[in-house]
Image 1 (cartoon, chains in turn purple, yellow):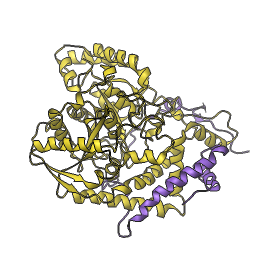
Image 2 (tube, helix red, strand yellow):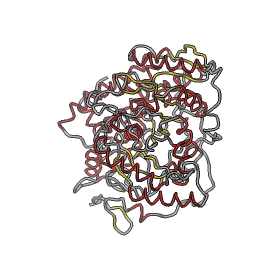
Image 3 (tube, chains in turn green, brown):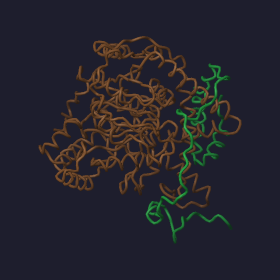
Image 4 (cartoon, rainbow over the protein chains, first blue to last red):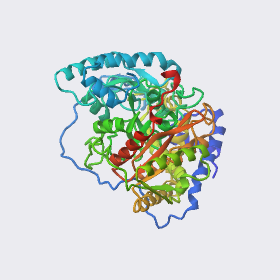
Length: 95
Length: 484
């Protein structure tokens, strides 16, 4: 399976990754090589095997519906690129 | 003193032979002297470490010491450390000061351990050579033209050069064991869920597991006693009872049944390593263990399955880096799309971008079944193969890697060849099994490791076998000449 340049651009857009125009050809080549590697899995028949998303048999735990976290907004926002009045600032979204 | 193990330092502190403040200064001085040439630390935590050390000394005077109180260790820069830069080896988090402690850090702080600094690593733990770090590659102390392995390469290099007595690492596909092998240290990847992932920056959540990187198995046991255990804040934390990992170190290994997977000793394995591992297994046989060949037929498929599952989970986990709430933001974004695209495009390195794109592709409509579901089925198959094997054996022994540390720049432009350097380690992550790498000799002056894989929650047994092996050998005591 190969990934052409248009597909590279589509994937990069889906992942919201800005990539340089000049790198697209390299990505196309590298990602195609990796996909060839992934397709080696086709060598084994897995029709009768169920997929697992986790190594261990886990069930989701429940907990009491109680507030356990304190509000630390000011501390957390110290890491933000731009804030104002407790809000995160982003470029204008609505004209 | 700097060549001492955690166990020895514990005794020295307890007897008053040295104070924590003195010990911390001693290791900080070594870090200052050697970090320029090895690049194993991203951040040295000098001021805070000395404060912690003074407090530890007070605690010891007051009779409140745990076995590890006052011992300085290094933390992989993937763990959030309150008030200390936590970069994960990425430009994306170059400006990130963690606002809280990871559970593993909290536990180590509570036990009185000192944070000497944060160690270098492959960016977001994606790499097997430490060359993908935004902060530049780490060097292997045994030969600075060689890589230390990755992604926990900074931790492995620092312990090997004795810039710290022990360090933490994380292992998603071999990131503790492969660098441990390349640098000649002991590295344990516990059972999935044994050590809390809370505050450990996520790469592939169903595979990630933290563990100790130490000089000896005994030290790994001491550290496991601090870090292992259930954590409410990690949704996949194991509620399984926790052992005293030092209690069984001196148990006999007579009668131990060792399985040797033919797939781990076949084509692709360096013949000198094969010989060293055979010697290592003979040592265990001298202690009364028995060996038999076993089959793990789909081992070769562990790499493709891993490179679907890990990128898929990474593409999801790394979507949080949006240039809005924390981390890197591009200059003058003109709109939201521009903000996302450029912040992520400029903030992530090449390998991380490759993996995000692969992950995005295999999860996208039309390809999900062929890649992602298929990989999950193969994962099940590989997991089952281990369980079948464990019907007749207690532990699996193998080389940790196919070859000793490769040269800097040798594989950085060949992702596939880099991926295959984890062929003996990724299966344990896919299956969630505990595995340890212990020094087993040298090939052309570079260390190599022997891997032991156990069934779920058998860390104590692995540490016991490793400890018995280390009582018979001295590979783990070797220190590269330049750092003696």
